[in-house]
Length: 209
Image 1 (tube, rainbow, N blue to C red):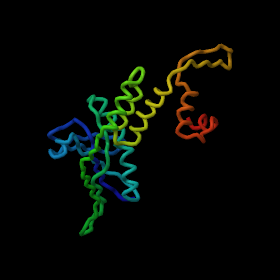
Image 2: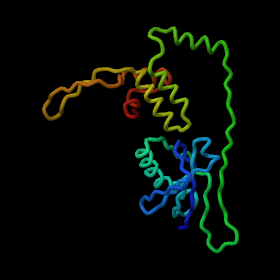
Image 3: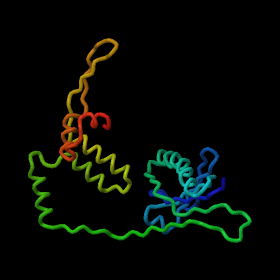
Image 4: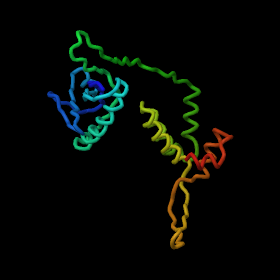
């Protein structure tokens, strides 16, 4: 097992003129706020971790850093998002040369051409009965996220909203009392999915949802 110094880019509004450190399970996570990163509301967080290779070091380091940024977000009330590593250095004491992995991300602007047809389609949505629902709002939030998990969460909220609510009745196995509550309309949810995938069976739907 070798020791790796792994540095990550963290998206946050926090900043400090000095480095700050937090300890968790015997590891020290050090936050630094270089000026060029601070302009983009980003910081660096570095932790040393033992691993068999740099890929394992990346996974092991995240298990330490995630609780650290959770705690810091809680105490500050500020968002923190661990984006990805940008520098990994292996401890090679005694070597004349040392190997390091350095990742630089270049962001290019992306433009989507708006045309008359798309505007007319949006107008049809606005003219529909009741207008746009909360499901379209969740969908828009999903489009603004870069992480796949974040996108899934908001798209799932949009899906549940589109399916609507229904009365759910469940009988207690012990006393026989019937409990009533509202929940997502699973029958309507199945129809929505089958409109996109006609081959989806009810059995597969129940097993997967």
